[in-house]
Image (cartoon, rainbow, N blue to C red):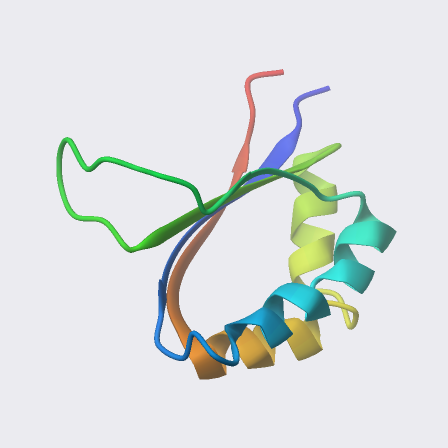
Length: 96
């Protein structure tokens, strides 16, 4: 079965408080089985535009990735992220 992924591109606007968001993701990731494959790190833009920070989270399926994003466990984290950062977040299905 193909896995599901969050691909997230972030510009952090409040670096002092952003760690609150990072910590708040834990309950949702734990419940829905999200595994961080990329969380920050060095990157190079070779084509197009980019944001400052990149994150890839793997889930057992596309459905599970969507459930996590729409969950009551993730809602408090989402509110914090929207407060402290500008984000592009895509949920995609892997190739299996």
